[in-house]
Length: 414
Image 1 (spheres, rainbow, N blue to C red):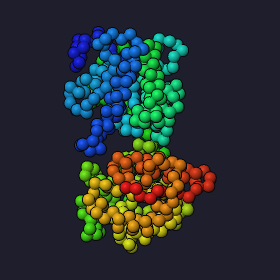
Image 2 (cartoon, rainbow, N blue to C red):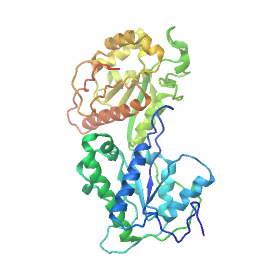
Image 3 (cartoon, helix red, strand yellow):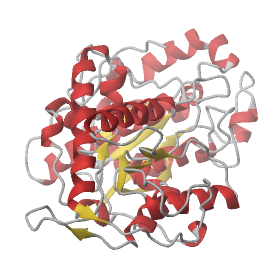
Image 4 (cartoon, rainbow, N blue to C red):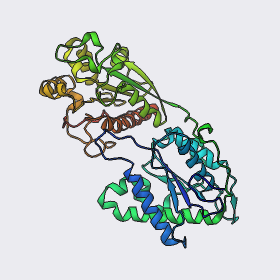
């Protein structure tokens, strides 16, 4: 019997199936971000080839290089999942939000796994790898229950993940070490277990193995912006809607409210986000000394032109609440933003003087982070850090420890 690839069912089986979340391009002209996963796949395949006696021409691994839907695509995935010897999920926040990755995990684990050695770890046939650090994310139950240690892969790998080790030249030797250790673990697990060839399943009909994490932690996201009737004459209505929470500063290419991206980031970190207009939160922010949840405020700098409403923002800013993180998304590609940047910077300096003052680099912020994301991709990274800052301060308050003043953010560098 032949599968979708033309190989017979009795032919050599690939050592591993690399399961990863496809990362979308930032724009149509950008480099394919999945290029780096492809490089990892090639390096891992070469390492396995070096430490085994796989005959030339036999498959080493499988990686889905396309995002094409359809019957042939689904049949190919099902065939590889039914035949591979080891399943290698590439952990990232995006991975555990991917329905396709959850289906791959589920399909692989429908196969029986038998241990050759009684001393081996509980057999699963799964060898996870860290694409990025997952320290601040809750793993789904199926992942958290795996008995797997990354210690032998190196401290920098555990702290940063493979993506950082690939991108930063000073980590080149650490990357080589991590890839070799991962290849050895794949081969060891393949040798220690017997996973009979399975029956290819109807891929699209499979459920995801990733149940939503328990949202035990909340985060409040508020938006200070305009709705369409409030806009000043200098500002186009294309980025605004009927509600102030409809603000879309990175349009195009993003055509959905920014707060939806913010909520997605928070959910990916294991939080339960709620979305509010700033005006609905203002009284609490002005009068409460003990917060009920960490908060993130998204500020549309254009809306600071409304002196009556911006006075409330100024008063909140002067309170310097540690559990409130402030972000000022700013689209570098927006011509109106560029044309009026100096004026809006000056207004922002006046209203957000506490937020913008000082040069001290907060301990939870990465080098080069400004709090003023200039693209949607930058915004998602800044949102993660904003949630972490607010959550850390909130936990300190809840545990009765002194809460430091909110960290000062560097001056706008966009």
